[in-house]
Each structure stands twice: as structure tokens, then as C-alpha cells.
Image (cartoon, rainbow, N blue to C red):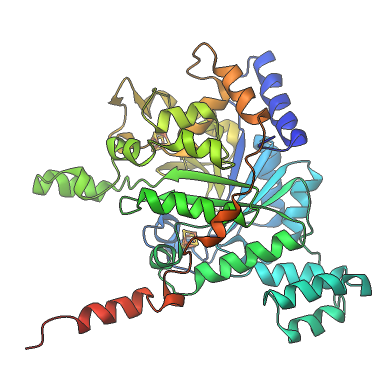
Length: 426
Ligand code: SF4
Ligand code: SF4
């Protein structure tokens, strides 16, 4: 199965319950942002810019756990900012698991190995020596790390242990050169790969989370899937990046230039994702086949942003992860007060100009799962995809030249230096 049976059954039961109750709108995934502080400043990250004035504020643990109960989504994606900076991340993950949620920790992985080492120390016994040997051989920990781990747990802090109900969801936007360029720091790709390798050795479930930008080359996306498949990654989420920035609309009006010059339009998204169904057969891509058809331009879907709500320090962010027309104090209040008919694209017409080019996962993937735009055969398609055999790891992916950036002497900083040096001399 592409997605473990217990997890699929949990989500299916939630959908069936609400269909029987005829609940018009309900949550499938909560995007929980306990904080917006981050240890990176990625190009195009809306969070660290939109919430720059409250960047140091954090949600209390109680508020985070209450938010999950409030919307009762079976899945919670803990994001941010960088959630591993949240000082009570261990308590939060444990609390969500106690509530029987499926938990995704969306991380840039810079602090992930630290958390993995904490876990290893907490379970250390001489039986772990074989694991330490593998980690040392793969250079995923240092000898000093191993000595610290051997001391065992030195405090009462909780740890994030492997669970079949939890995934590390690691932000990866391409191979080394592209990824480090987007996150604006060299070495981040390598750290993410090492964290993924270590997590897999320790028995965690790991997914990758990719946003496709205008500059992203299709060939590179395929190579990225091949590489991470060879590392036995459990699944991939992928979504088109979308810059809805009103300022850009303004620039278009002012300059008369085309949107294609600035951001990923619907037509460009369809071009980039033309092969997504083929990728879905080769790799474990999370998301419904109906959403994949939509991305490939084979059908239309209606935005169902209410199914993947975002909760942060300011409240329930409406209408969606991308645009903000207000924050509400409860999920119910947001459902009731927002006029959802004002958003999305229907029959090619944008109900809100900011939605015009949007095809993102958090708006449209739920439509595929919930049958919002039901077509004959959709249910069977979704079942067949989820219950179908999980694509085998692509071992040849080890040959992909993934370290094509700083590790091959082509980091973006050095690249800039090369291009400056290659300018004609005066
Ligand atoms: S890691 Fe995530 S939250 Fe941090 S800057 Fe990058 S996109 Fe934004
Ligand atoms: S289409 Fe939906 S998800 Fe996209 S920007 Fe509009 S409301 Fe948000």
C-alpha cells in the first residue's frame, strides 16, 4: 500500500463519518504553526515575511493541542517557521499522538539529527552499539556524538520516538544546487540528506515535501524523486509554488507585463506537472490521483481550503494557508463567518483575483479526497491508488548527481564568484 493501512483506515473512517452526518465542511489536515521563527530565510517564504512583526511569538502547548481538538482533523502537519525550534515540540508531538492524530513534522532538517541523537541516547543500551557503528561508518554521527549517546538520558526531557503514526516531512526543493539556492544557505541539502538517512536507520517514517517553482526543471524533479527513493523515503508530497502577492498584480497593471514573467500561472503549473501521473506510478507520491489529474490539466477541481485549515499565533487563518483575510478564534467561527463562495476558481473564472493561478495542495487536494467534484470512477481511482502496491525503491537513484552544488565546488556563492570572475576584464 502507498500509505499504511491503519492510517488510510483512520482517514477513510473520518470522511465516512462526516458523509453520513452530512457535515457540509470539515477538516482533514490541520496545519499547525506553533511559531513563525525560523533558522532559514528561504526565497519566497511568506511566513517569515507576513508574520515578521510577531515572529518571536509562540503558541502555548495548550493552545496547540486545543486547536487539534477544535477542528478534529485526523492529520496534523506541524509546521511554522521551523517547528523544531519550538521548545515543547516533544510534548506537542506526544500530545497529538495521544489524541490519536497522524502527525507530520514539517522541517528544514537543520535540527533534526539533534532530535534523533536525543532519542538514541534515551534508549541507549549496549544493544545499540551495532546501530552506533552503522551511524559512525556512514558519518552520520561523530565519535563525540557516540560517546554522548552512550551516557544515556541525562535529563527528564521527552524525545520524539519512531511511531507508525508519525512522519518527518523534510523540506526538499531540488538537488543540492537548487535547494541551497532556494533556502539561501549552502550545506542545507547535505544536512537534510544526512538527517533522512539517519532517521531511516533508526526506524522512523520519512517523507519529503517539495514546492515546484517557475525555475524548477522537470528533469531535476525526477532525479530528486529517484535519489530520495533510493534512500527508502516513505513518500513525497509535491505542490506548485504560487506567488499570489497582490503587489505583483499591481506591477502587472502598472507595467502591462505578463504574469508569466513573475510567477507560476495555471498553464505553467500544468506544463510542469504534465508527468505527475507517471511519477505517481514510479514513486510513492502522497495525494489523490484526482488531484494529480487536476495538476496535469486533465480536469477542474473546486478549492476546498476549509478542509486544510491553518492555525497560528493569531488564530484560525482565513481563507487558507496562502492568503489572509482575517484570523478567527475557533474553526467553527471561521467556517461560519467566511463566505467560501468568494474563493477559488470555478469553470476557469477566479472568484477572487488572488486565487487566479492557484492550484496548491492545501486548496485542491482535499477536493480529490472528499469527492467535491465527483466524477464517475473517482472513488475507485482513489482506492486503487492507495491500496495499490507501493512502488519499489529506485536503487539506481544512488547514481544521481545529487551533490551538484557546494560539494562539487558549485555552491551558489562560489558560482556567483565564478560568474563575476568570468566577466570580460576591462
Ligand atoms: S524553512 Fe520553511 S519557514 Fe523557514 S524560511 Fe524556509 S520556507 Fe520559511
Ligand atoms: S484557490 Fe483556495 S487555496 Fe488557493 S489562494 Fe484561493 S482560497 Fe487559497
